[in-house]
Amino acid sequence: MTRRARPAVVALAALAAIGACSNTAAPSASPPQSASPPPSASPPPSAQASSSPEPAASTTQTSEGGQVTVVATWPGPDAGAAFDITLDTHSVDLDALDLADAVLPNDRGETLTAIPWDAPNGGHHREGSLAFEGDVARFLGGADWIELVLTGIGDLPERTLRWEVGA
Image (cartoon, rainbow, N blue to C red; front, top):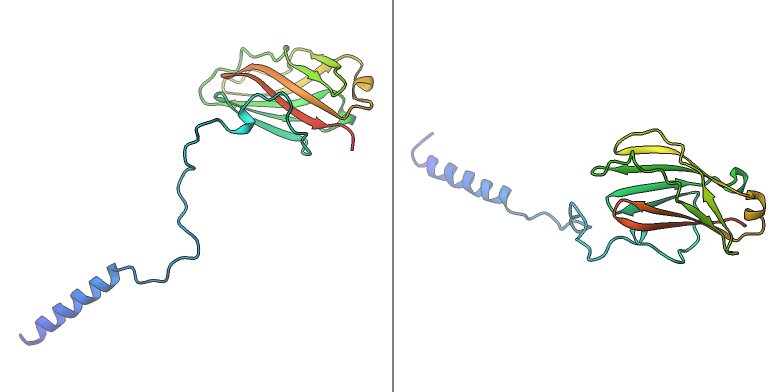
């Protein structure tokens, strides 16, 4: 390469590098997504206690908050008053929880009480069946909705999950 050609090659290489570093591509169709949602001043609605939650169409409901996530599944009236409950946390020992203080009211003001929770110890993760005693057929018969009310799980004083009974 001649001495006169070297400056031209260096200049072309510099222009190519500048062009590669500049953002001349067409703008993207969607804005960039942040890695996490913006902080909220209040907890999510599912974490808040509610005196009259909306009926749920799904058989599985989740309540997050108070350092513990509760997942409750009720297959429907044919299953009676029995729920599959899963508790999950990263900071609280769940082995001491019994859930025997849970109650199951309906829209007519009737209430069933829980029997001790059938769930093996698991530390930060527990799963088991929660059943209620009483005349379940009469309790569910003609009811519009039922609510599973759990107290003392994590930092929330109460969690209320509602299911429609009749279609």
